[in-house]
Length: 172
Image (cartoon, rainbow, N blue to C red; front, top):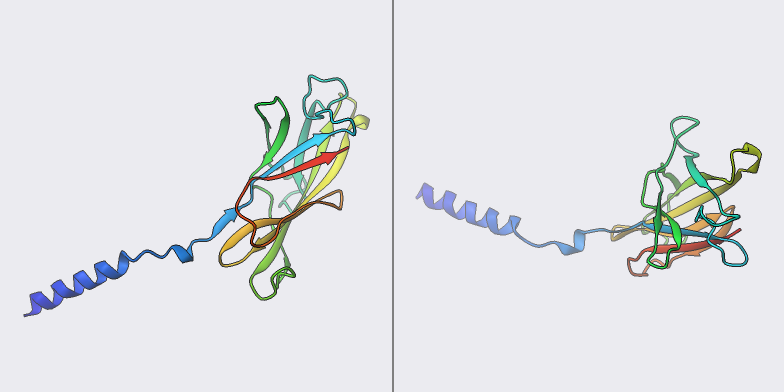
């Protein structure tokens, strides 16, 4: 009799543990592609073109040290346009305890980075910009909600927008 009890108990636990719970999965949407162009549309990240930047470095404002590099990859599209691909790496701070876009649904966070573009070996030629990425965090989604470049909004996404690659173009 006792072996039947343990057998039934094992079967019940097996069935309960195999239950699918897709509603508990959180979508993560934080990939950001940053294109940098001038007013005439020239790709400023292509270092082979005259007038473009020869390189860039990224520093996390909220890093544990004064110099806290953030890894941003330089990629190229099939059309030979260069862009910076940011996935993660900068520390996030809480922006508020209740999201202004969706009150009562989660928290908002933000990261702030300094991007230094180099044109030549002369440090005076460097261009320093600020990139702020704001995130929306709810039980169902963690996503980029807004991007500010030098304190100017350049990207925003609604809370119910589908997961996608977030693309911004900065004109310098």
